[in-house]
Image 1 (cartoon, chains in turn cyan, green, brown, orange):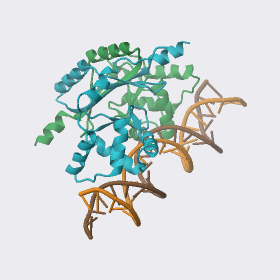
Image 2: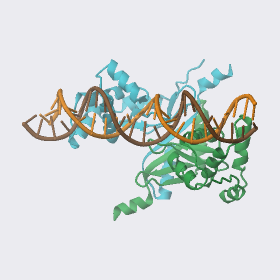
Image 3: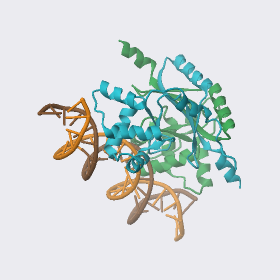
Image 4: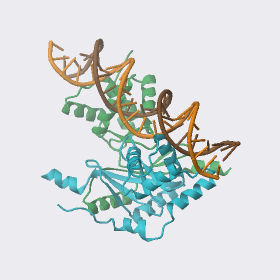
Length: 165
Length: 165
DNA sequence: GTGCATGCAAAGGCTTTGCATACCA
DNA sequence: TGGTATGCAAAGCCTTTGCATGCAC
């Protein structure tokens, strides 16, 4: 069975190739400007998100932090995530109903998501035409957009062929 | 307490210019097909959603039901909402973080939303070009879309001018 | 040293569930 | 009448918060 590893080229490129700002520097600056403290816990959370390839929820982050870097309490995790979102390093999504998912976005181009209802797979895609149409719509309504989300739910390629059998 | 569950003919007419299917009929059919019971509570919830112009959350529905038609318990409300979503009469959104919002959609064209971060205003819009681009993206990925959501967050016209003053 | 940050545990908000009773089919 | 639907209250889940202690600045 074929794997769908197709248009991820864009993604890998945007994350690694262009020299994007160092997340820890950016975070340090944010913390300084807001007179917040640069702690090991805060950096551990950021590190885990930078390393993660997928979207992670709070529980997943907690587990990884316990295993791999620096265990952190739930309270600190949530408080840190708030800062990371405000600082623009991380985006918060609510695909599934119930728990939020977090994604490291610094230096990455805006992208949208397809989410498989069956296996939970998240496919990212970029479509500039859609982006510019969105801006157009905002202009028409005098709406100043700060953020937008597009999510397509359905059944992914693999689940579709699995179903047929 | 009196509960009359039938003033729907007028309703449907006023809501849509095109003759769209009667929601109560559609629901009744759904219930019959699934061997579920056609109860006053279930119809009251549907009625409230049909009448509502805006997106409503569970709490808002509960309040309206208490005041205007037929009081319903939280448990029944949520259980009924699930059925309405499955039946395709209602869509569930999670704009705000925390509580879901419900919207009656039967016979309405698919549309997307702009949500004002300041005042909570929800503006609906339709853009066929975006729709077809979305379908195109799905085709490219072999993804079978069942639903999609586009939300633009930001500051609405009114809040922008209010801010300037 | 001064406060903010952390961790713990408890509380919060929304939603779901177990169980006895009510009522549709 | 049989068996689902309802309502109540309690529990679940994710997230936030209060408070004493710890640590960055």
